[in-house]
Image 1 (tube, rainbow, N blue to C red):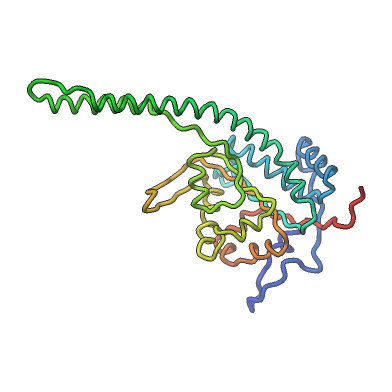
Image 2: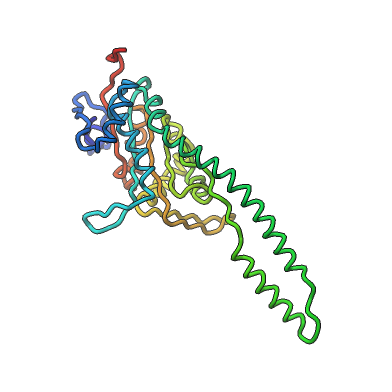
Length: 299
């Protein structure tokens, strides 16, 4: 694992980029002793099974833990500020470092939990559709009910129907949340919409993170809005969007963890971007660039 100075490209006074990886990069052992034994054992087990660098295994496990716990608590900073318990991880490794295999092991509990949610969702969706049909029937019945007779009947009739409809709205069934826990290459607009229908705690996970970094969300026209939006949800758990078609959308109490596995060239593109640095997005990333084990594995 290299130091932040080795990873994040600095710029000289002439604004010429210094290479992302220097020939004198100093690798440090991942601090396994700082982790609870449950996490350390999980990381060691995945590393034994895949023979991938331990840093990749640790990043993957910590990202899953971040997603699993971020909806349960906040973190209190020394400044007495309360922040979401969410982390943004970037793992830099060449092709062949077993990134996909590690990700498959680490995210297996997420897939198990997603299957449980999916089973419950199918049950809840049938009940929702049935309850909604009843609601629509009752609403139509109120609107078509016979008018009152006598003086001022039209006013009385409108008041009665309005009152009945308001009471009926209290029983409007809510559509169940979709069983989605992670996404790999969303636009920020798509992420906002996903929070509206899926779980309030999500993960942006990609073992081929180049799909996100090189995708629509990170084009020159979109990347500032994407970085600002991701930074805001990292800071506050809030999402805002105003569009002519969709109107004003504001969500509170949302949580997002992120883990992107990137090849060095793609990571250089991300970490070299002065816009991301100026916006503050890079300071929110926990970056690991482990020493390669390609050619040193014994089976």
